Length: 164
Image (cartoon, rainbow, N blue to C red; front, top):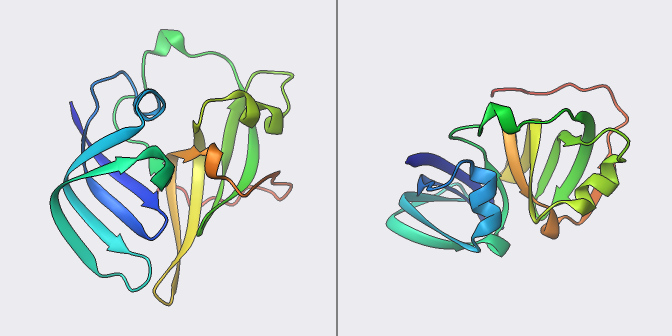
């Protein structure tokens, strides 16, 4: 199944199509270290210009975050979790979103217990494109925790630009 793919790399945004081949995007991002994106558009953060390619191969370590699309996985496999609001600094991006952890596990420990790519919900990712500050909201964003410069708990009340 092909899904829409939106990723946040160090110097550009990547839009295209990805052959999912697994139950959920998070599993694919953790199981593989490279991803082939077809019908790709790379949009420069420096000035917004776009380059279109038939396909491009991306490595996990090039991606700070990927917007989750596609199926959510089997409902029967979902477990009860507690939400904690985090702020992450990932290269040129600031991400504010909820991590879901097991009851009794602190949110920062939960980040350390997970694989490289971890999902956050009710997310705002902020970055500069050209001279414009962009605040992009999405329901779920899978972030590359291995590339996080800082991770901290958000003590402020949640004001999410959800679904923008």
